[in-house]
Image 1 (tube, rainbow, N blue to C red):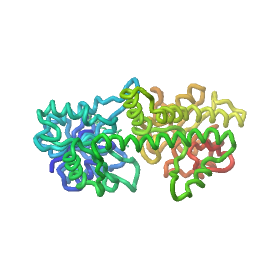
Image 2 (image 1 turned 90 degrees about the horizontal axis):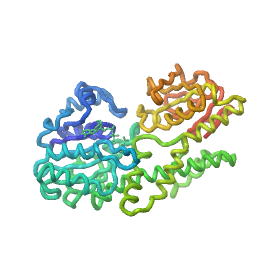
Image 3 (image 1 turned 90 degrees about the vertical axis):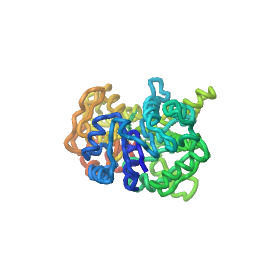
Length: 415
Ligand SMILES: NC(=O)c1ccc[n+]([C@@H]2O[C@H](COP(=O)([O-])OP(=O)(O)OC[C@H]3O[C@@H](n4cnc5c(N)ncnc54)[C@H](O)[C@@H]3O)[C@@H](O)[C@H]2O)c1
């Protein structure tokens, strides 16, 4: 089986790895020459795959290209390109459209095309299908199969990957769903059939919106629990002992990554555009979560104030600037708006992160501290990477603001 994966990032590359491991002949198509050259010479650019993994994939027949002509005769084409927000915070499907056009030029009778990029319900049918039909001259559901399968990659997760995370598939027709299910059964242990592509698209947005809303709930609670003198982390620990009906979410300095801050907007856009009313839960969650960086900075000023020190001129050390622990990905990380606001208020910043060798905010280099225990007037723990010795950090810090609820003791201030 010839498989073409369009978009070799955090999503496409692990899928390519699993498909190559399953014995499929995999070609990766990407627009970035540097990505393609790196992969073909055995270099990984994503956290979850090592250079040795890429070497194994190459030995299994994987290769990458920027040229659609180098992907002839695919049985399956999977689209894993980015779906960012536009200037007006609406969906930006530029990459999906371009990748779909490339896929359309590769189609032959019987090919299966799957969209994995997160997007609003209806995209597969209303955007992808017409482009494929125009480029190929074939009809979806008759000449070729078309489906949506939400991607569920969790970067840095050592327990769940492409193979053992159940895969939802929904096709344009029941036959398309079955064609997609047959393909994914080769690379995933469990395949879940959705009623159609729209339900599969909605399932992904439901998953992400659920996280977004629940994180906003505990973030809002963290703010008033601080004022009420209640330890919210301890309350969550107690609530989480209930064996049914509760899932623990934790407050933090803001949400980051490619998914949670972005994808729910795709859903609220669709509701507003088609039904002319707001998806209030998403908009409220967006408002609360996006205010967290400002709250962190206000709290930093309050903590320094106890030491009779103004934020203006204070040396502030930020620990962990990636959007998630134990990975290098900085996309949408709340560390950046926090650093920006601290600088605006006159703080003298430094940072430490074992995964980030140099860090710029608004084009300015932030000095990298030699150690997470470096001296500062205030240390703010943003990301408790597993390699951090938190007790040593707490012992060395003059004042430690812990935005993750991982530490306690004198001189430690929780969010
Ligand atoms: N990263 C995650 O944790 C995650 C999780 C769930 C869902 N998603 C979704 O998966 C999709 C892909 O995300 P990602 O994190 O893999 O993005 P990414 O930026 O890591 O990778 C996307 C790749 O697609 C390439 N690309 C862009 N336009 C292209 C085109 N026209 N043709 C070929 N290649 C093209 C880029 O060069 C890049 O290498 C998004 O819709 C995202 O929302 C991501």
